[in-house]
Image (cartoon, rainbow, N blue to C red):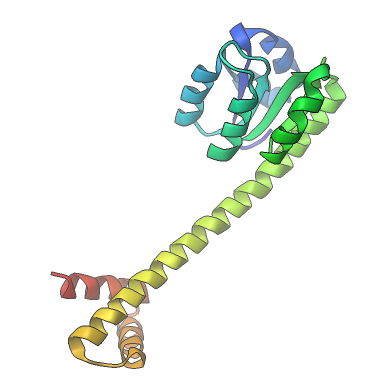
Length: 191
């Protein structure tokens, strides 16, 4: 998996060496290992992992809780390894949360395909995350500009259209963004 580190979450390191061998050459060298869900949570909070592989069950929980939590709180792709007989119980809630599930014993070809799917899913998630961030920034800019227009309307007794034109004109005259003009107006009027 490209673009970040891998975290293998294996109870007491059980199966970590076998999982490392299934990872691509570049990833298995850099893979970190967590022995419990609590340790994994601490490690995930501090680093930008691209992939988390949960080898369930864990010593402190089943592993499903951790896997679903990680998909909700990080941008990492998450793969949950479960015993084949538990697959029917785990599959629906895991996939609904965005977790990729692989049954144990792990078949290397299936795991490789799952890694490819995880990489593609994470790439798409990163694109959506950047777009989401851009839209949030744009929305915040609109809020700042609207607040500045309201202050112009209140303090200068002008219409919304005139307030809009005043901000646009200052931005064009000074060759700066409307947001910068709006922030300056907020500082000036909100003393």
